[in-house]
Length: 419
Ligand SMILES: Cc1cc2nc3c(=O)[nH]c(=O)nc-3n(C[C@H](O)[C@H](O)[C@H](O)COP(=O)(O)OP(=O)(O)OC[C@H]3O[C@@H](n4cnc5c(N)ncnc54)[C@H](O)[C@@H]3O)c2cc1C
Image 1 (cartoon, rainbow, N blue to C red):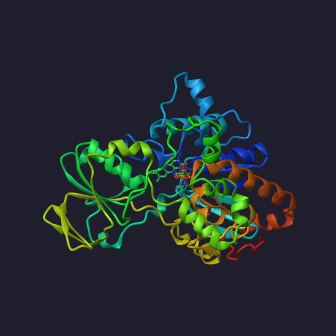
Image 2 (spheres, rainbow, N blue to C red):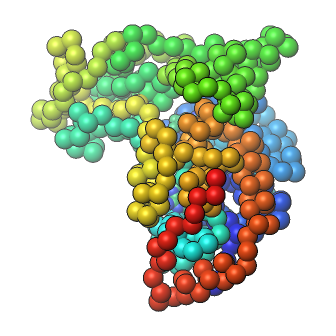
Image 3 (cartoon, rainbow, N blue to C red):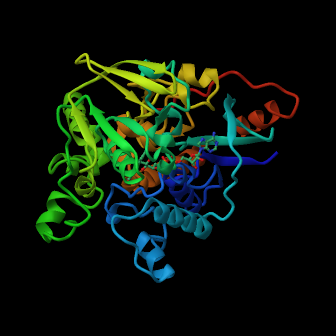
């Protein structure tokens, strides 16, 4: 049975870039997952919130940037960059750097002595010394319990809002004040729905940095809003430097984090917002089905009769919801706000198990929620893996290989905590 040094689960921006860097460093890394699948499920007509200078995927040869992609396709990409173009870019990156991505979903990851056993959906079993979980946000949609009793076709999380035209002529309530909610409200309105946006926040924040102003103020703008910046000037510099961010005292980090990722919308949504009815500073308290409609009650005692509800309520990472981790792993993970608590270079308290992307943002800061964080994450991880491989002893690994020969059960002991 083949044993990989590393098995990367997930073929989105983080999984692709991490694998590209690992392989360039000579690591035998396998990558599993449906390439850019998360981005393919987002709404038609969606534009990226990030400016184009913050969405290049990190490749070790520096030959696969968005600019390289644009040059090769010989036609300029409009700015803001469209979701569909970003998907094409990601797929191009994958074809160029990792043509052998294995699309099979992972069902289960369990520890064995000296590594991990990875079970695929078709029953195949792989062994790896290290596993990198880069499965993104798809399992972590935050849903309001008040809607639990509604039918799935009455209430959608913004994550699953693909075709807005099916709501043409309908009354739709959108909840939330972040990018997903605001953009959903606009796309639904433009598709012919009557949309009311309900936000808990008393106002909507619009981002000062826009695609149009990017670069337009010259060096001052680059200083205030460096490429990939998240948050207001000052805070965004700390966020851009994850090592500095980690070194800050806890309370400072938390305040910076909260401010950097405050719900807000891109400035380019604003002029398209005219047709949306806004109800600010209100929370949903009740929801019930009345015939083919939904009656939604708000905390001011008013109610609405609507055809559909869209929850633009964000995401909440919880180690028990990755869906692929064995109960032993979930029990052994030290956590930070529900996320795996990560040590140096993205390794969790289960030695050899790494997490990239949004699942690392409480440890490494909000940059890890964004494509702009892929370079830092991929390089840090690669350093750790290369150092770990040179330390790994063959005898222990031979034991692992024997222990998982077909027909034998998992070895339940977890590898010790090395961090
Ligand atoms: C509406 C919306 C808009 C956003 N806009 C921006 C933006 O403008 N700029 C920005 O920087 N960020 C944006 N983000 C954040 C974005 O999610 C991340 O930047 C980026 O997608 C993170 O990449 P990832 O590789 O961690 O996860 P994902 O892109 O979600 O990729 C996850 C991968 O894991 C795979 N996978 C999942 N489970 C399994 C399994 N069991 N087995 C095998 N494979 C599996 C999936 O198929 C996929 O390939 C946005 C997020 C949302 C929700």
